[in-house]
Image (tube, rainbow, N blue to C red):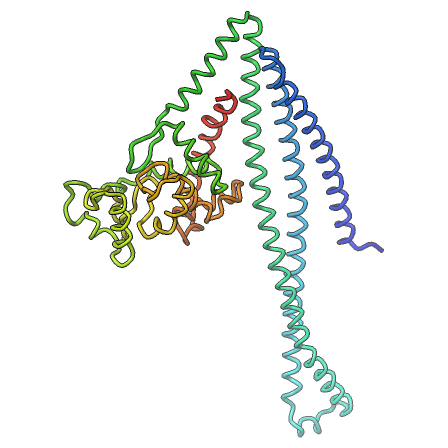
Length: 424
C-alpha cells in the first residue's frame, strides 16, 4: 500500500516535471524571439523596423514573465514540501521527548524500590526483576535515542535554512516579474506612438528620433544630488557608477539609490567642522579620538586640505560624528578602502569628497555587504547593513531599505533603461 507521504511526494514530482517541461518550452520561445530581435536590429532604419524590434522585445518580455511565473510556481511547491517536512520533523521531536520523559520517570520509579519493598510486594518476584532488566535495557538505549533526536534537530535546521533560501528566491523572482511587467507596459506605449507616427511621412519619424535624443540629453544633464558635495550631472554619476560596478559587481542603479537616499537624510550631515563653526563642532570634538583622529589627519594632509574647514557629519544621538563626503565614511573606514578605490579610479590618494571616489567607495562597501550577489533580497539586506550595521534586521531600520530599493527602481526604469532604449 502506498503511504500518504509517498503519494504526496509523487504529486509534487509530477507537478515539478510538468513545470520543468513548460519552462523548457518557454525558454525555447525566448531564444527564438531573441533571434528575431537580432535580425531586426541588423536591418536598415525605418519606422517599421523599430515597430518590429519593439514587438520582439514585448514578446520576449512577456515570455520572461511567463518563465518567472513558472519558476515561482515551482518554488511554491518546494516551499510547501519543505514546510510539511519541517512540521513532520518537529512532531517526531515532540513525540520522542514525550516518550523519553515517560521512560525516565518509570526507570526512576523502579530504581527507587528497596529490597524490603521488593520482598513484600505482591507481584511475582521474577516478573519484578524482569521489569528491572527491561528498564536497564531501555536505559542503555537512552543515549541512542538522544542522538537520534539530536540528528532530527540538525536536519530540521537544515530544512529551515533551505526554506528561507527558497523564500528569498521567490521574492527576487516576483520582483523581477513586476519589473518585466513595467517594461512591457512602457514598450507597448512606445509601439503605439510609433504606429501613430507610421501613418505620417518620414518627417514624423525624424521628429521621434529628435525627441528621443532630447529626452536622453535631459536625463544625462539632470543634476544628481550628493551629500557634502556639489550636485553633478546624472550622466557623470551613471558613468562613475558603471565604472564602480565593473570593479565590484554591484548594480549601478543600486549604488546610485544608496547615494540618493543618503543625500535626503539628516541635517546633521556636513554641518560640522565648517569655516566659522565653534570649536565644539570641530573635528577634534566630534570624532572618536582613538579611532579617527590619526586617519583623518593623514587623509586631508595627503590631499592638501585644511583639516579645520572640511565639512563633516555632526554626532547623532549618543554616537560620534566625522563622516566624510557623499558616501559618509568615517576616516577609519575610508582607510580600509582607499587603496581599492585608487585601483579602480586611478585617483591616488583617493578623495572622500570627490564624487567619483565616493561612488566607488560606496560600491566597494556594498559589495562586502553582499550586494554583488544581485537580486532584491541581497540588495535590500546590504542597504540595511550599510545604514544600521549589526542592527540591520530591526523593524525600525526597515524604512531605509525600502527607500533605497524604491529609488534604485526609479533610477533604473526612468533614467538608465531609457538611455539604453534610446541608444544613448
